[in-house]
Amino acid sequence: MEVRFLRSGDTGLVVQFGNAVDRAVNDRVLRLDASLRAAALPGVIETVPTFRSLLVHYDPLETTAAELTRSIEALLDRPQEGRRATRLWRVPVCYEASHAPDIAEVAERTGLSVEDVVSLHSGTRYHVYMIGFVPGFPYMGDLPESLVLPRRADPRLRVPAGSVAIATSMTAIYPLESPGGWHLIGSTPIRLFDLRWPAPALFAPGDAVRFEPITAGEFEAIRAAVQAETYRVPSEEILP
Image (cartoon, rainbow, N blue to C red):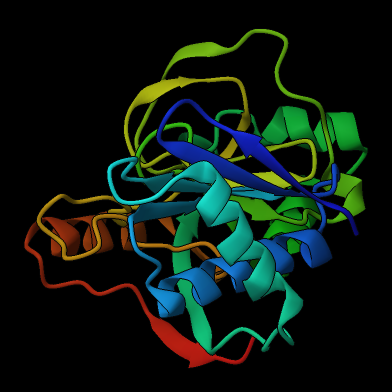
């Protein structure tokens, strides 16, 4: 796989792996991200993993794009270790119509029953490819093929925080109220982003997520616990 180095302004370098949204490609991005963090190269300020590339922010007073390129090429030439253990998050989701404005339409367009949509969506373990769009927004894949749909033709101006959505081969959770063009098939009462946390985003690239169906009553009970700051999203350490 050819690796490309692309300048991103005066303080950024993009390391690009391939052109596809692919688990193998994303794993290479995440392995390089871990290697760079461990190497602590002079001048590197921050790394931002995406589907198929890694953006490296650097201080131009301490290093240059050319120096960074040489250092990263040396890291890539070394045997790549597998990624370390990651986290599996178990996210409660209410798929009832009151919390899922598009689920009936999704069922109709896919030729499935609403129950099948819920079963397929909640029965899959998802990989967090990247965080983007708005703070804490996780792009997760891959959806079962029978749930793949294009984005909505009429995007909403306001999507409520906590909305669980699907589009193309991805699923996501809206951490904040924002515009959006994905199909809303559920809602979660958990909080995904909080500046008071040491790491403000709950999920990180490379994490795994499972959705666990809950009733509207359970949704309200968990939401109250979240607001009281007594609820913790169930999670466990797993091997990648």
